[in-house]
Length: 318
Ligand code: ADE
Ligand code: ZN
Image 1 (cartoon, rainbow, N blue to C red):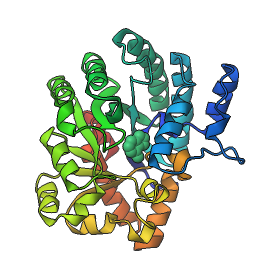
Image 2 (image 1 turned 90 degrees about the vertical axis):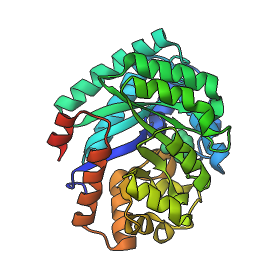
Image 3 (image 1 turned 120 degrees about the horizontal axis):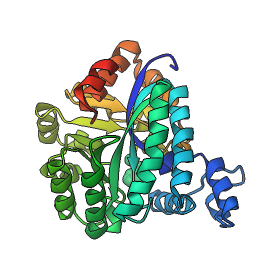
Image 4 (image 1 turned 30 degrees about the vertical axis):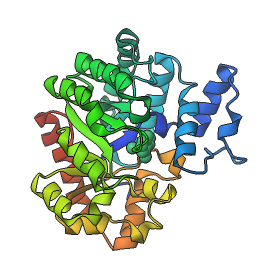
C-alpha cells in the first residue's frame, strides 16, 4: 500500500500530533496532562465528547509558532512515509493564536516555511482553516477572517469541525460567505454523528465537500442530490469505527455510497487518536471490500478533483 500515491483531504493537524510529541511539549512547559494518556502512552477517551476534550487538552500545549512548525514537519514526514503526495490539513486559528489575526499570521509564517520545504521533498500540502462548531459562531467569524485575509497561498480553504449537536450550521453562514468571497474552497463536517439534515444544512452553505457525510446512506433523495452536484465525501472509515459510529469495517457505508454514484475519498481524520494510518485505511478497505489499485486510483482522482489547490497543481497530481 505504501507505494500507491495517495491524496488525503481530511487530516486535522492537531489531531495528527503523535502522543510523544505532545508529551514532550507538555514536559517542556511543565504542564501536567498525564490524564489524557493511557498506561501505554496512547491517547485515552471513552466517547466522542471525551475525544474532543482530550483533543483540546493535547492542543493546549501547542502555544507558539515554533510548536506548530515542529508539529507540521513531523506530520508531513509521516504523510510522505504513508505514500501521500498531497494532503489538506485542517488547522484551527482558534488553537493557534486564539483567533487573533496578527497572532495567526505569525503561526502561518512558521508553518508556511515548513510546508514549502516539504513540498521540495515531494509532499505538497494546503491548509483548510477550520472553525470549531462547539466554540460558537462568534469565534468561527474570527477564523473566517483569518482565512479570508491570509488565503491564496498555503491557505486554500475554510471549514468547520467539532460537535455536530452544537448549534446549527446556518448559524455559521457569515463565515462561509466571507471565505467564499475570498475565493477559498469550502467544506463542513456533517452527517458524521448527525442525520441527513445536517448534510442538507452543509449544502446550503455552498460547500463542495462534506467531512464524513455517512448518514446520507439512509436518504435516497439526498444521495441523488449529492451525486448530481458531484459533492465529494471526505470519508474517514477508521475514525468512524474507532468512535463506534459504525460497528466495523465491513459495515462501513463507503461501498454503498460509491455504488450510489458518490465521489468517495479516503482520509485518516486524527490518526494517532484512532490507531490508524493512511496505509492501514487502504488495507482495511481492501480486506473488507476486495478493493485493489484500480478502485483506490479512482478515489484518488476524485480527491484531486475536489482538492482546494490550483489547476496546475492538480494537473501535476494526476
Ligand atoms: N475534530 C477532530 N476530529 C473530528 C471529528 N471526527 N469530528 C468532528 N470534529 C473533529
Ligand atoms: Zn474531521
